[in-house]
Image (tube, rainbow over all chains, first blue to last red; front, side):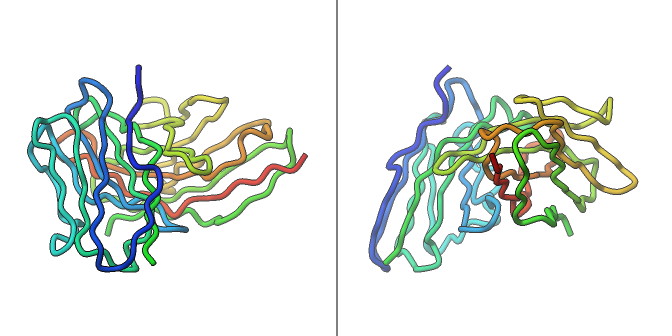
Length: 113
Length: 115
């Protein structure tokens, strides 16, 4: 089966610009997650979707980050405006249901200048 | 507070030697425990998981982990390391069941393998 697809793989922007990441989960997976992985740290959950509804966004900086999964399949994560501390790898993961193991994409590496 | 501690930031072993990566956790409910591996520039791949049953669990690539409730530990082991095992290893803990599946990750252990 095809894995979790993410694009772009790399993105370089200047601070205060906006950026968007795209994720297509494994077919049939109802639950989708966005994680932020800062260099030298483990991934941190930003938001979890169950189909097209948000289950947990407690660690999403809502003043600048937004995410949607309108049709319950693919998802976009947006940052506007970007800050230097947003430099990280953004990982998307999906699972069949919320209590099943998560499968990760290769991530988008974001660099803020 | 919920947390995962991986006390070893970096470990170097010789090819063919045995390996043990340490993981300790603090979690209020019954934990669902995982080990993931991350190669450079790639996402995380699940090695193994544990929720209940036999406390020694087998995973892919010859890895195993042992759950010790009394020590709040879930250490990863491999009897003979291969050069291709060089990567970063993450321990994670999460809830089992319910709507949220929020995993809390440790900071990772970077494994280097000497020829």
